[in-house]
Length: 574
Image 1 (cartoon, rainbow, N blue to C red):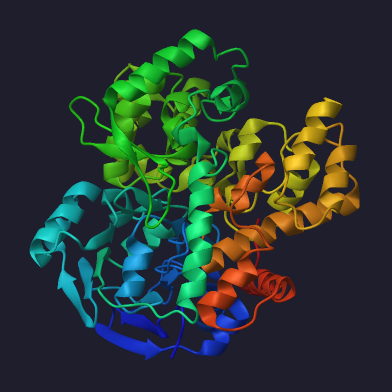
Image 2 (cartoon, rainbow, N blue to C red):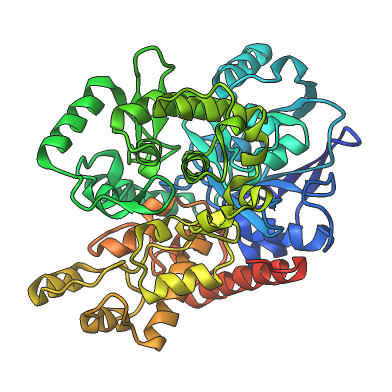
């Protein structure tokens, strides 16, 4: 009997119209755990170097974290991986919510999709019943209607539907895959569109076996209470109304303008009222005690949910205020856009217009009001009309096509993908090294365990260190104690910090744990949650196989080496 995992993956070839339930090799679990670890191995084994990421040969893999669907709180992340058309590297994304656990309870550790359907289809999964269904009637539909109509067709409102909108159908680089309040962005949406796969609907009712259920339940019950009680765990931006950090330090527009004195007490109060006057409630992901999603009902808009920095990106790109984000975000999300990169592409286009690189002829009929310009460009990009067909390639791709000096405005991308901390403009050496060497698509998939800035006050620094329980070794305490200037860290410290950051994320992405209860929270010091020292015991209780910190570290090193080898094999392009 397999524990914590089902032992099966669903293999779907859309070109052939074939569906196969395949037993998996338990050795892969022992070596790579699950999630992006096993996904990376599948891509390494099956994708030929030199093949076109847009081709039917590319894989789109929905890989469950090993602990998804169990009683482990916060374990719900499914890794969605592919070879990214934007740069030819492994494109890695995470989707929380309910899709992964539901897929596990349907009997599948992962869904592997290859090929290209003759026309638009969706995949319907209910335990062992799996069908490829016609989706031509869903063409051009947004996320909300697609999910609702599929649930009605299946006569099952409890089915979870991961879908693409028009942006994904039209292979827009910034397209995402959405399921309820959660999404998988960062390059996977356009691949789903290239395969003409509109959605995957999944419903599962099977049990998941655990090796030591009583022991795991006791441990997880305690952890759940600790997570629930600790205000430093979870997405702080869901509840903390002081967002001076982003607004005063991050760049507005594309990436050139900072407004260091923008935030004020009166602004914070006004935005707090704006939010709570239109918020229905907070919601969360499967089996997590933290409610990190703000559910907003804005006038004349469909109800929508957001989390993290997504609440800032549109109004900061347009030099507006929070009401503009609440106004445009539900429209953009329904079209199937990633809320991180899309506003930057629009701001980039308007900067080129201001600079004379693009002209009014490139934007026929565009309104003069900046808010309406954002709506105009959303539609153009989603349906690849006019200039939108160029901007659909993302900032780097569009800059290369436009030329005439547009490349000078492509200044916040690495690996041809936007990197948010560059917009922050104050990278410390460890973060610089992570951006330069990390294999994941975005820095936000690597950072988080070590603070971004030193603490200069000696008493506050010692208080922070005293409560900083996340560190796997006391040497990190000492390095932080000695750290005075942000741009100065010893070489040894920098390398070890990067290793620790990457370790936590690779383990989270393999096990299915949300970074907000694990890898991303170490930077805030006195946090409880998942750390290297309690993960082995959880895995041991779940799998019935003895794990210790050394073995866990070996899994991390193996996963990182595998994905690095995959990118090198593909012809690494930064």
